[in-house]
Amino acid sequence: MTFEEARAQFPMLERYAYLNAGTNGPLARATGEAVIEQTRRDLEHGRSGMAWFERVLELREAARLGLAAVLDADPLHVALTDSTSRGCSIVLSGLGLGAADEVIITDQEHFGLTAPVHAAGVRVVVTEADEDAIVAAVTPRTRLIATSHVLWTTGRRLDLRRVREDSGIPVLVDGAQSAGAIRVAAGEFDFYTVSAQKWLCGPEPTGALFVRDPEQLRVTAPGYLAQTSYEPTGAFAPKEGAARFDSGWLATPMLLGLQAALATHPEWRYERAAEQAARCRELLGAHVDVVTPAGHSTLVSFRPSGDPAELVAALDDAGVIVRELPGRNLVRASCGWWTSDEDLQRLAAGIAAAA
Image: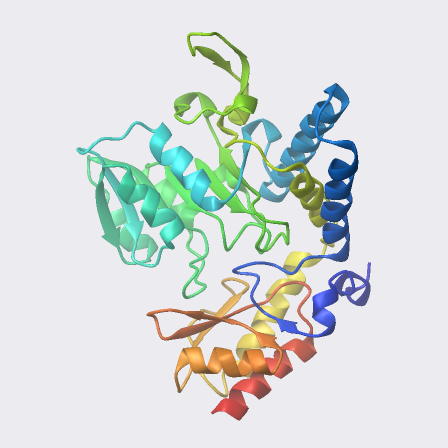
């Protein structure tokens, strides 16, 4: 598949320089059609019967296989969720932590991670978003390190494999800005979360959670599809592996859409995305202060000379879609494998015009 053929899957790219997959990726034509087709089918034929239910189960397992491939993981270790936030909550509640336990996070985390950590009733230790700082914060009370693989703010990629090895502490990874954007080997960590609507261009809400050792994590919010049998007393037998942590029902049209989305990504996606991020840094460097380190991720965050919100609005008027990071005086461009040179030139021209 050529770049032109692959990019043509996304109708919105015909009109916009869409650089905001860090929030939501563009939807492919096949993804939208799959969602619409299944919704129409349910509308006309209903949502009941053994054949319908068995098909739902098959679609769930197909989604699990597809997401496991993204994570380079065994499907047995992958749970279906609706977001990275849900995955983080499953882990924090399942570890059985208490007030005497410490969880280390960085000062650059998204609310989707910080909220479950603070809600867990633990002592929260906040460090700089730096590998050495994280390891230095470990004490005998530390039970978990929870941080992003790629920071949603600066786009810096943390060497979490080194953090895991040097600290000896389990690591919960917020993979919202990494899964689908850069190559991931989730097995290097203890827990890895995915938001499929971002870099995987899936419909929302869809996501996944990798669990290295499912037996070591309690099921604290069991869903109907996470058990193999149950008793009137409430006792139940959890499914084998990470499927016991499936966070609940995922709408059938969304499962079809996710399956279609996972089929849109070419083999060369990671290399192309990295090249476009490097090109973006090069073009923007003449106009703004780029804060994302070279070669770290597919995000390019920069500090404009004027008001970030005004710049984002001006770019939007010009058909260039980026995101302001509120309270941080930053604007963020997300470079996907679908990003063209023309998209980046439109971004640079828009910034130059605003300046």
